[in-house]
Length: 266
Length: 160
Ligand SMILES: Cc1cc2nc3c(=O)[nH]c(=O)nc-3n(C[C@H](O)[C@H](O)[C@H](O)COP(=O)(O)OP(=O)(O)OC[C@H]3O[C@@H](n4cnc5c(N)ncnc54)[C@H](O)[C@@H]3O)c2cc1C
Ligand code: FES
Ligand code: FES
Image (cartoon, rainbow over all chains, first blue to last red; front, side, top):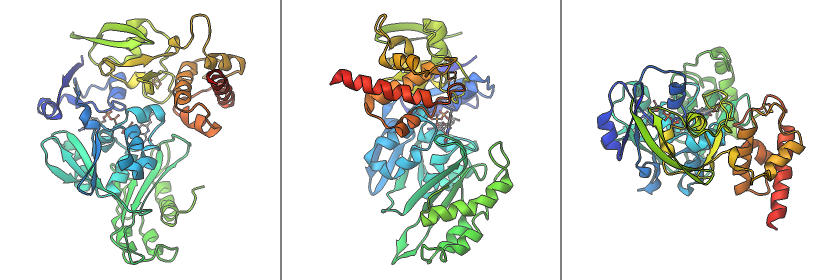
């Protein structure tokens, strides 16, 4: 039998978590589990504090509360550069419910928003106030203790940040893969690029070989050639009902090229 | 087992009841309150027929923990008609073959209502986006989109 425990603050909720507890964000995945008889938890822990939804600027970075929904992200002026990402998560009702915090834990093939956060070098802040780079957070999320309070990202300039979701059904299809890139430039050349792939591994993953291959190049067909040839190094896709791992690896460089060169998807 | 009291407004009426731990809003409305207008299709967010409006915004009631509806305003298809007078969306669906088996209809109507309250003059693309979380296995969608366009026109005429 399930018990629901409601707390005023995230800190209180964090201290009430047991191995049988599941924290409720927007509930799109937790309630699916409840409806389908998931026996891995007996308690649902939730927090009433509406400030968990806040989105604000803080010292040059944008802080997004773990409870902010995709619809909140689309509506806030601070996160205008992420609106296009949030808009591609589910349909309108899902976006009114799905939170940024929940997306950090969403399993394959979900995690489109997290893929964007990974490319933006986000920092994850936990309920105890500690902070962690998103990449190490993702690699240890299944054993994480505590709850996520917020994430913060820098504000990318102009067209430096790009995101594309590849799906078979539009709008609203689930990802065959999603790709987020952050391409800071110095004197016209790319410097310290970030490339993240979603649905190409157990969690969203960085394509570090491709990132390195972009360093110092011009953003044109010739400049990105080497990066495309190593696009899938370090990724680890699986077969699922949408696409095989083989297919994902074959098409990843094609989609990456389109994102980098700003080409229309077909 | 522990029951939790909750209160919300349902189609404008104050509603109070006890819910079981983990109960979703769809079961609560259907079995607890007796409003059978939102339907159960999948219980996992994919079909959209359980769509209700919470504070005016579409939500999937099958994935909403009932307790989170405390103090909020819920609208379902049951609240659309004004007595015997159907809502323009309902009329347009009837007259333009927007419903065949009817299973998706309550979700479609609520998704459409949420759209039109924000955007009284939507394009076809905007309608497609608004109903993209709602699956229809009968109509092929075109008559639904037509019906929403027609209802939008009528609602604009009313206000003017
Ligand atoms: C129809 C449908 C379509 C979808 N489409 C997409 C899609 O296109 N792209 C996509 O990425 N996802 C998609 N999803 C999956 C899901 O809705 C999103 O990933 C969403 O962001 C999950 O957030 P939530 O708040 O609903 O998570 P919940 O269900 O509330 O939680 C998910 C997990 O995260 C944990 N959690 C949540 N918040 C915190 C926190 N603050 N601290 C610690 N742990 C936390 C929970 O305990 C749980 O284990 C879809 C889901 C459905 C039902
Ligand atoms: S029953 Fe809720 S989405 Fe299908
Ligand atoms: S009318 Fe049958 S599912 Fe839409």
